[in-house]
Length: 480
Image 1 (tube, rainbow, N blue to C red):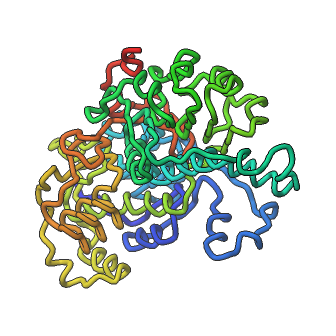
Image 2 (image 1 turned 45 degrees about the horizontal axis):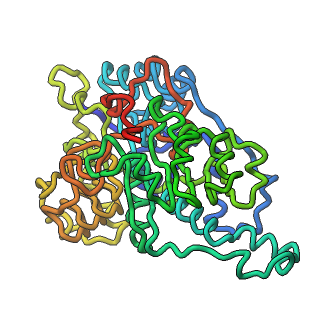
Image 3 (image 1 turned 90 degrees about the vertical axis):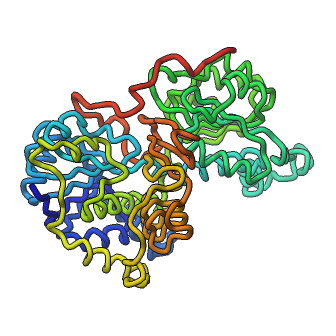
C-alpha cells in the first residue's frame, strides 16, 4: 500500500526554513504546542522593542484522544510532534507517519505504532551542540566570576572590601582536566570543545567502549566535572555525599542534564564547605534558597537546548528522513525499522505518491545547488565506517548536517549534495547514538535524557523504552 503525503500536521516548534521545506510535500497545518510568537518576532525585531507582557502565552499538549481528533479534522497523513502524547486512538486516526522531534520519543507508544505499521521518526542529537555550548558558557562565567563582577560594577561596589584583581582572580583552563560523566551526543560535543581549549578530558560511561575512566577516577582527577548521563533509575543521585567528597578540592561542578543525577543537599553542603569551588546548573528543580544566595552558584531555568538552530535542525532531520522515504530509501533515524521490513504489513512504506525528483529539485534550488550536477551524485554507498547511525552528534543524513550521510550540504556526506568527500565518507556507523565512530566507537544508546525542549513527563501508557532498555543496571558507580 502506497503512502501519500497530502497534509502535514506540525505541532512541534519548527523554524521558518524547515516549515518551508515541508510545504513542498503537501499542505502544512502549523499549530505548535508552545507559542512561538517570541521566537518569530526576535528573528526580525530588536529584542528591546518587544513587550513580552503583551504576547499571548499558550502551552497546549494534546492527549491521545485530542490528538486523534486533530488528525481526523485536518486529514493529516504525517504528524510532526514534540510533546503531544501519541498512543491508542492516534494510531487509528488515519495518520501514516509520526515524527517526534525528540532525542527519546517516549511521548509515542512505540509498541502500538509498530503494531499499527506506523513508522516513528525521531531526532537524536538535535540539541547536542546547543547544550554543549551552554555547558561551556556556565564554566566560563563561573571561572571568570563574570556575574559577581558585573553585579559589583552595577552596584558601585567594585572597589570595596578587597582590591579587584585578587577578588575576581580565575584559573586558566589550559591544561586543566575536564571530566565528563556520560558520553552520548552531548558528552561528545562537550569533549571536543573542551579539548579545543587545551584542556585534558576524562570520560566515564560504563556503556561506551571509548570511555576509559571510572566515575571515581573522574571525580578524583578532574578540575571540572560535567554531568551528561541519562536520567534513569540507575543514575538517580549518581552524585551523592560520598561522590562529592571524592571530588578534587576546588573543582567546578556542572550539570546541564537533569537534577535527578545529584543529591542537591549534598551538593549544597560541598559548596558551603568550600570543597566544591563553584556550581553551574541548568535546572531549578530542587535547588534550595541557600544555594541561590551563593555567588559561586549559577542557575539557569532549563534553557540549554533553547536555540533557534534546534528548531531548524529538528525540522531538517525529519525532512531528510521523509525525503529518503520518498526515494524508497529507509530513513536513518527511525525507531521501529521493522515496520518497513515487514512483508506482511499492509502499510509497507512506498511513498512514491509524491514526486521525489520534483521535491529534490525544489530543495536544491532553495540551497542554490546546481540540480543537474546534484542528480549526478552517486547513490548511497557503504561508507568506510558504515553508512547508517542514530544519535550521531555531527548529524548523519542531515540537511545542512556536518558529516551527514546522504545529507544535502552535508560535509563528508555519503551521496551528499555539496558534500565534501562524498562517497565512502568516514564518520558513519550502524549503531544507536554513535558519534564519529564505527560499530559503536564513541557511541552510546542514551535515551531518557532531559536536554530536549519537550517535557520528559510526556510518556504515554504502555510506552516503549528505546535502545537503552538493553542496558544492565548498576554499572555507573564502578569501583570507588
